[in-house]
Length: 132
Ligand code: HEC
Image 1 (cartoon, protein in one colour):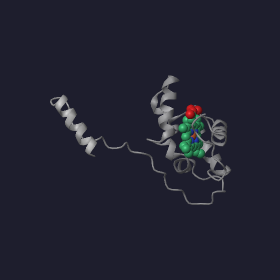
Image 2: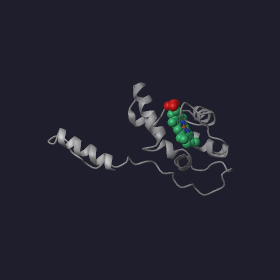
Image 3: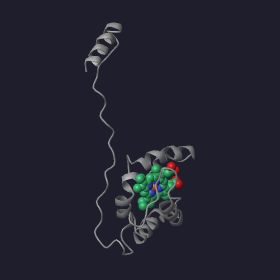
Image 4: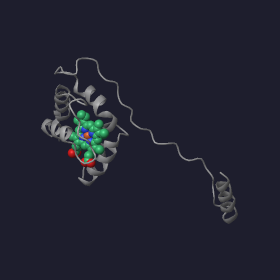
């Protein structure tokens, strides 16, 4: 504390007219995990969009780290940054989603059958792959 006060005093003496001691900016918002849908996790045919938001959304909705990392990849691929949100993609196939989820990809850790059951993954992959 005392050191900071000394630094501030020194800085103010060096450049009194240009230094502004403002509060730091607020932290960026981050993605919370969406609520788990009701129903048996082993049953097929549940809502893929809702399952996606719960199981993948904390990384793949707005402000999620998956979305943030994919912005760079999408731009490098010449695609719109909006396609960093997986929900906006029309080029994903269900088979590709299955493979990435079970094996992981780059910074995405593999998701086990405890994280996402086979039935849940089928629903999520069908929903994400709906454009193909
Ligand atoms: C812990 C965070 C995290 C979770 C949970 C997560 N992902 Fe990811 N995902 C990422 C990251 C980060 C990437 C980018 C990986 C890279 O290339 O470095 C990614 C990439 C992907 C890709 C590849 C996109 C492309 O353009 O190749 C798909 C498909 C995907 N995730 C699907 C899912 C699905 C479906 C779920 C839920 C079952 C899920 N992810 C859960 C972090 C996550």
